[in-house]
Image 1 (spheres, rainbow, N blue to C red):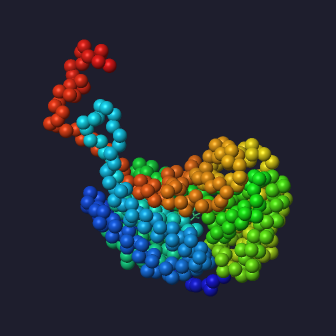
Image 2: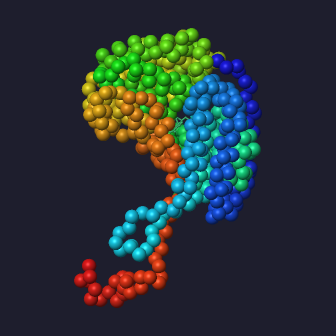
Length: 475
Ligand code: NAD
């Protein structure tokens, strides 16, 4: 466990400050909107890149202080993905922004048809605490690439990171382009009374609903990146050791506080026995000196989150813990080990709520039909994981279920692919982002049709002009 650092005092914005700040940014937005040059976007993206690169140690320290995130995990899951997103936006900016000329029907032969991506205006990005750099700055890169102005609202629970975001954004980005608002529910509520041209919210479904309702007031389009219970199906034909390694890795990232973490495993009784044995083996392999002493393992964000997990375990009566032990938990450090549980009652909160921690129930199901039925009884998850060597089986499971994304034979890797959109469906969210999808999310695709006045002569269009009497036969 890294040494405890006193959290910085976050000075939350007042409603009056939020009013002034949004009004000021709105003024800049209206004056910049039509001339937000590519050079300006490039300048801001480069500044954002340097904001990470020049302060790596500070970002790593903030993530360590907030979540005990080690350098490797901070680089792998937060800083590098953000920089990759910025580099992609810089490399692709010209091509993304170029007008596109779609194929034309015969009728439009002489016309020019094009689509132009234009900035939406002033956008609001509200972030969660679990990946407090990645989930705020990746969308920011796309919003800047698309030429918008942005208000960032980091989560107040990742205190050190929020303070750093505020300090460095003010230093690196143009205040006429990007502003940070610090605060929690009250400040977000206050922000939502102002008009934005798009809101991207990442967080819980409960707050997602609040955001959507507030946005409806202004008909503001919204992207909601929410959570859910991501099922992890393991069929009998796999090598359990490889699968155990990938599941344990994906579950242990950020101590399970990952929106796409495996929430529960679905497998046969025979596979359950093999997975329990191999997961134990993998834990020793990954954490040779024990989990608590390992520098590679995060802590639960705050006492409230720790207490929530404790209650989840306590309410799962009649379940069996087959890996981990309640006695290993440590309140002061907010340390929770991997707890693999079987026979968890279906109606217990553990099987009803998103777990968001290192608790991993195994649900027994003998046939793929049973697995599909189990998944479909619940709201659509953010991710679905299927482990099998049988393509027909994985296709069948994918084809009979719904989820934001799918990863076959691995965990979370689908969200790192720059060419794939990331987003939920139904209860796990709406809309998506990542690379060009972020650019599209924050752009209005404007259709422009141009008809020449001189050639061909206007007589070519005669067919559409009245009088229509006697022209029925032309159809
Ligand atoms: P949260 O909904 O509690 O908070 C998210 C943001 O909303 C924070 O900035 C917070 O200050 C603000 N907020 C909190 N209460 C509010 C209220 N009453 N009114 C207005 N704003 C409010 O979520 P969290 O605890 O920060 O994050 C955990 C959740 O986020 C999990 O459900 C997880 O699955 C989800 N998540 C989703 C993704 C994704 O990309 N789909 C990524 C990470 C986390």
